[in-house]
Amino acid sequence: MTFNIHSAIGRDEKVNVDRIVEVIREVDIVALQEVDNFWQRSGNVSQVDLITAALPKHFHAWHPVIDLWKTPTTRRQYGNLLLSRFPISSIKRHALPKSAPPDELGLQCGVLEAIVAGPFGDLRVFATHVVSTDSVKQICRLLDIYRSSQEEGAPISGSHYDETWFEEDQPTKIPASAIILGDLNIRPGSDEYRSLTSASAGTEGERLVDAWSICNQASSPSVEGTENDPGATYYVDFAAKTGERLDLCFLSADIADRVESAQVLADCEASDHQPLKVIIRSEPSHEGGK
Image (cartoon, rainbow, N blue to C red):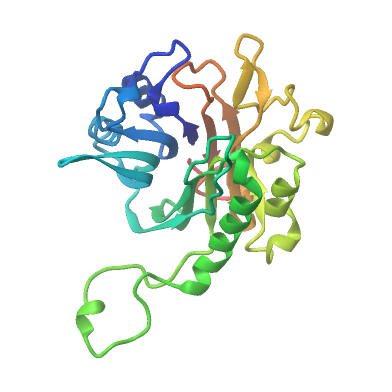
């Protein structure tokens, strides 16, 4: 699942972390964006602590893309939170390019890269949030991070006379299979979207596939990326359920045949975005589990 929680501010303009927890409680892997720690707008609490305490069976990785002094004991943070029922064996944090537009909000963004020990083997999971003002540069950098992670290898690699670097359990290689989850602020059919899904994005193993498109091929291409897109996750009209498909799940081509369903939770009112839930089978056939 990917879910931009908007600081846990719902459609009623009230902050309620409990609503977020109830949406994600049964999800195996979830990437949350716009998570606050110690902001006045969200009650000066650590939303990371509240969410993770409420989900003790989930492992988590936190990437504060904005990290500012607040008090001697707290920092005002904002970023991406990854939660997983499966162990997270490795975590890397990347900054995305940022501009400083004088007349628009400029926010630092980033990519949280993790290796998750999933039911069908190790899996690279990239949790990210891209802003529209810098989407071209940020999608380009996201692709670079995705392509280069295998080439860079495990966090500790090679050999060394000091064997203490290698005496404990740790990843020894980077898996090919990958999922990218996030509010990407790009529209289907845009140049940025095509850069992610085109064959030129890499080899067959590196090529990315949109999970929603796999499951909703009957949708008319003429409405994709418009306010009538059936996969809309950011509603301009909540009652009519019309808006833009900005929150996306991409998979490496080698696991695309494991996708069983992709569903927008259209009635969720816990944020200004709708969660996107994707079911991935543990086996390529329909006989496998989630």
